[in-house]
Image (cartoon, chains in turn yellow, blue):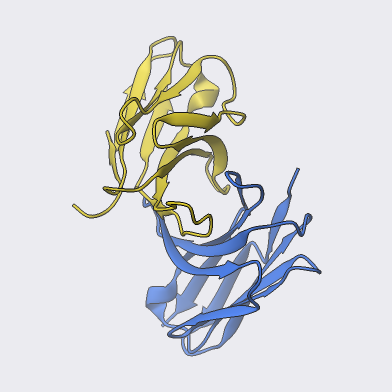
Length: 116
Length: 111
């Protein structure tokens, strides 16, 4: 498809398990963002990639959260030893950029993570 | 840290009304401001993006304005339709790689 694709759409895990969330950005998009969205709130920034380089990870809530984009396309957000407060929708967005900072973000439909 | 506020939190109007959604931000040093709509269980769909040097953008029945110095943006929706029912979010790009979102305005347009 032409849009940002995220998988799985829903993930249920037991507290303490590790999870991995995948994001396929729009082909050719340089920038990739991960957000966490709690119910009834706007998305909160987690981390930003420009190609394969993770330029900002200041929004990651703890060292249990890890993101990578090894080849500058697909990205994975990993959460280790999940806790109940990790339950949220995780959104991925990509942007064309290519030297221009004022490009719109395109979002996937998100992964709804529930920790039991 | 940039703070983004959206008022009202929820709005219910009859079909056909014109309406205004508000977004305010605390730090005027922004690259751009983007308006999105979010349908339940879905991601965000970009509606309009206003560069920091622009005053407004229009797309169909939507018009967004930006007053950077006062830290405000409005989204005007003309002749609202039931299909416009969704949550509307504004986001400011503050620093090159940081986006800050408001909590959104949940709009219900009644037939």
